Length: 541
Image (cartoon, rainbow, N blue to C red; front, top):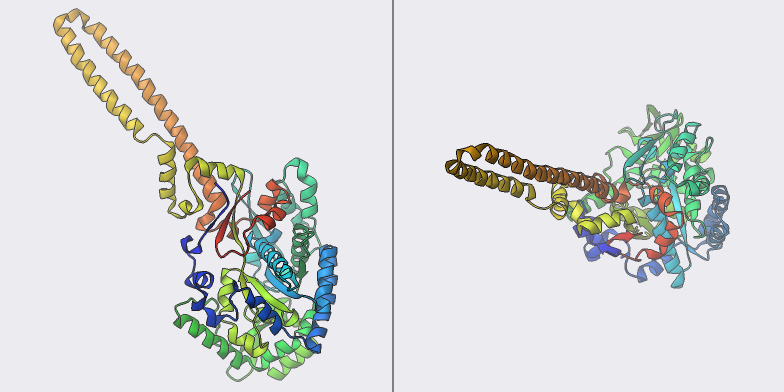
């Protein structure tokens, strides 16, 4: 069994939009600016990036913030050199990002950064200097999505780590500070590493300490994982980035209705073409949140022209004055966030997961109206990692990942079919019945010949049936043992490769693999992943 690819058409629950984006782009071309698998797209996107003095000054200020943040995150000299390339305008940015989940969240967070590194490396080699940037979605306020992670231990059993906080509901997750309880969670995670690798675990997890914020801890983890790759990490909670984004936020306030109309029309076109609409906006929604009382409050329009943030009502003039004085109190919603990102950075491409790729399909008109350009939307690497123990089980039963997509009872039947002698117990029971019948007939014949032999014949019959019964019982015990083995192997395969009826990358925390394979596993993946690739990749470790 070797590493291989699986078309997304074989993977359950893959949407029509994802399939057409990957395999028949002409069907969705009018929703995006560029074909992500056309090499010419990246140069065209780079040429569309602004080069005027205002944009250059903005990018230089962003680079100053990045230099400061990446020193705090532990970024190395290669990261700082890449920041300098952004400051000088020498390079464009390949951007990806993710919510700042506990200990990195699901594995696909790491695969986004991995894809950005590989794409930036490829573009640079082809003569288009590019820098990988990872945008921490630190302003997101859904703490329930970010405060836990699922670990796969060495026995391929699931362990959940969950953090609680006294921060107010609706606080930006990136700003939430860890207290002493993080030490116990970090300790539980470190237990996955073998004793001889304790130092590696300690260094890798050092950012998760009392006093650190979710954004700081996530940024430090990413920089340690990608040490030497030149990755640049950006935390948008920095006040200067909000100051730079003030013109974009102003337009989002002043042109709320017109911008919402653009998104609604794009959504209608998407639905008419037979695709799902990823983000549905309420009629009175805007594209901004306002911080109030430590909480991130959605800003909504009222029919009288006023705006509501929580229970507080504001006029447009009041909000514009607040924006001028305190831009850090404003943050974008899921639709405006990509535009803030591309306002701040010379983005040539954004590395998106399937759901993100879907909501970018709604954003084309918004990009044209506010920025006059849209980057290449490039699909992130989608991976299932197969560790040696799991590989041996797959090979034992001659299975592959798609075999696990069926209902669990069907998968179990396939394992049993290849491990248990079919119908052996039934055959033994039938044979026992035939032996008993033959012995009974023989005993009757012997009794007719000599009645005095009846007792000896009966004793012999019982002994023979007893000995045969021992064989049957031992066989039944052996088959029961094999049944337990089948159930155990099925549990290993489903936990490791298709947990909760979904792809591994959407549940498993990547550190589960790092603990067993060592931190060098990421460098191996960077080299081993087929790139660029439209398919889901099964990688044997």
